[in-house]
Amino acid sequence: MTKASVSPTCYLFTFEADPEFPTPRSGQFVNVAVSDDLTLRRPFSIAGIPAPGRFDLLVEMRGKGTRALAEKPIGSAVGVMGPLGNEFTLPEPGDVSLLVAGGIGTAGLRLLAQELRLGGHRIRTLVGARTSEGLLHHVLPSQAGDEEPSLEVATDDGSEGFHGTVTGLLKRALGEPDAPARVYCCGPPAMIAAVAGIAAKAGVPCEALLEEMMACGVGACRGCVVATRSGYKAVCSDGPVFDTSELVLEELVRA
Amino acid sequence: MPDLTTRIGNLTMRSPVMLASGTVGYGPEYEGIIDFGVTGAIVTKTITLKLREGNAPPRLVETHGGLLNAIGLENVGLERFLAEKLREAARLGVPVVASVAGTSPEEFGQLAAAVGERDEVAAIELNISCPNVERPRNPVWSDPAAVTEIVSAARAATSKTLSLKLSPNTSDILSVAEAAERAGADALTVANTLPGMRIDIKRRRPALGNTTGGLSGAALMPVNLALVWKVAGHVSIPVIGSGGLADTGDALEFLAAGAAAVQVGTALFANPAAPAEIVKGLETYMEENNLASMDELIGMAREERRICTETT
Image (cartoon, rainbow over all chains, first blue to last red; front, side, top):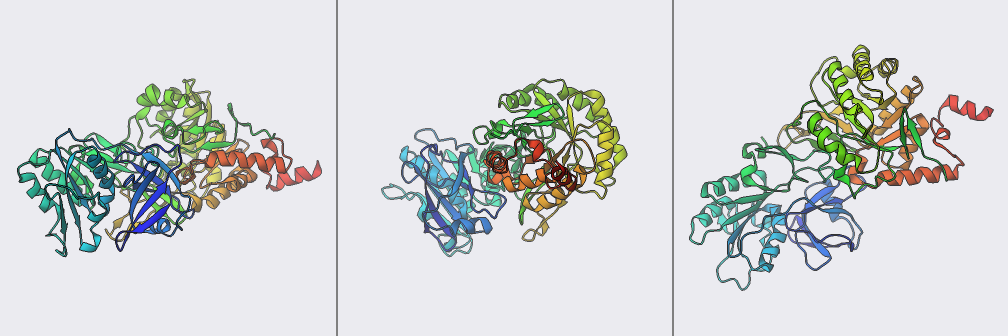
């Protein structure tokens, strides 16, 4: 394991996987044994494949688990279960995809961005954060060589880019000619609910990668459920990627 | 090579290490992750007559040395369990103990009859002690009369081995244990989780959707160990120890206290290899201490046992 600081609160970790570790697909996650002192592992989205046999995790220092991971010395062996969960539905050739990330939600879309670029798909990216310090767009695959400006950023405090939320940018993007045929989003529940609502109004299919507290990571304990139109589903094994038209958005955002 | 073969009623297991209800789903979820080959038995997610959606999320919150859960007995219901899940579980090549919960003695009887007639079911665990479902006052798990009715109903419905899962949340566990034994239980699983809660200060709300949940994990271990000690000294049917055990040392303590078998639960989340490690660890311990069979291990810390060893 190696790590690099990418913002005041986030690290990009790169793991060298065991040979039997399957190649992860965008949307999947790993359940990581971050500390012997904690009862649970911590789930993290796979945030990139820098080389065959390796994978990245983009992690924000938020609590005991994430700090325990960050405190591990470079070169540590870390217990990792995975890759777990389902995958994003990839777009049709020629379609424009719109990636919408809020804060650390960028982690959930970074591998997708890499896969789409490798596959020759056209993508546009909207990245938001509370302040410019929280923006993580610079860890996304390089925008160089693009004919059109394909990345826009928004900050709640206006310290960088659009002054407001990414959903403001999203409304504009969906109204433009050559509008995206698909939306992918990851971020805080309120952002996902807003993005899902806007995409639904515009009639554009939208998938969200959800985050939830997890125990087993394989669908056994039923601890990480989300309300859907067909009942509670496990984020770990039925997700973490959900078609947002399936989600009960009012229950996604916790009072 | 020491013999870890463990017998609970008519249930014969290759090791005393079972997997606790609620933590392994129906089994196949953990296929390829847990080594079922050395595991004594899996205890399924608790089955109810009708499907249950479970509680509103959040359903989990970590605590110091433990975990609070309020799943709310989410399960596929009896019909789908019998039609699908049970067959899938049986394919794992490990004895399947069906955990069931009813809302009345009649329901317990119905459930025990339905799962008991299936060859894939090696034994039945009666779950009367889930802290996350209704009946706030005078809970069944503290009521010897209610326990007598439930166990009697299940006993009349099946000849399969029956274990009653007790709650640690009672002031008089011995009366409950006694009632279960008299009504025909073959074993007692000691014990379920303890109720607890945490508050999410950011949201100014209880952290769990259900407000309270069941505490499991290392923090629970000494509590349930004390109950195993108490119950095993009081009844003559086998006791299955459960509660926060995570490694060989913990398992040895439960066995030394008088448990005939142990269940690993929450520890699986951090370490799915725990059951295999414990089996290996028990073998090593028995070899090093010249113990040939489980009988020599069970209750080895008990006074009556020590006197017995000294005089022979």
